[in-house]
Figure 1 (cartoon, rainbow, N blue to C red):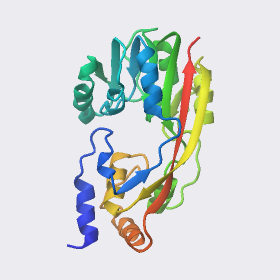
Figure 2 (figure 1 turned 180 degrees about the vertical axis):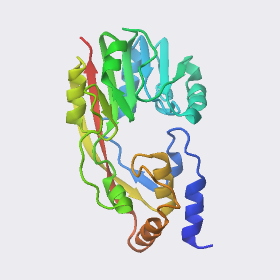
Figure 3 (figure 1 turned 60 degrees about the vertical axis):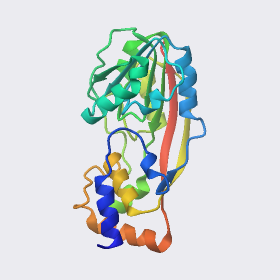
Length: 260
């Protein structure tokens, strides 16, 4: 079997559950945003009374905080992640609820003083405001528009720039701009108190890393399968073998908003 086929077979079989990216060590790299989301999250969690993590994945980021508030809840839409999140967040006695990304949140009005989310697929700003207590805060690191577009364009051909696909004035989808997210937060009645954004260098050192990444982060190439994209994967493999790592840039922004 060729090196390409070996790497393809490996990339196809790595489990994609949860948001643990440790498998990529030595095979792909991504710069970290300068603001340090995990540390800022820990600071806010230590001061909160009741917190909600929306689209928690496997709960890995929330589980990293050293001190959690007395009340912790989390939502997740993908079934394989639910049990992982429940295990990771059991030490906080967290309630982990299955909720579709775009659905209403199953919590009462004014229930949380802190709502957080790292890389949400959808942000329902109207629901965030509803469940926040007065003076409560929403704190989130999100995926900016055009994230990893170099890889998208290589696999699918050049893509036309598009506005946020959602027509709902209170809903932001993954891949939106910080400006659009700010406008929707304000339209929902929240006050945006902080916005920061960065472009971060990524390097893919082999085609197995590319395949696993595209299987895990499904919005980069929405219809990705190895069979459909085998020719492009073979071309990218050859390019990496000849020239070194494939370079792309992730777009990230941090946003914090408060309910008056």
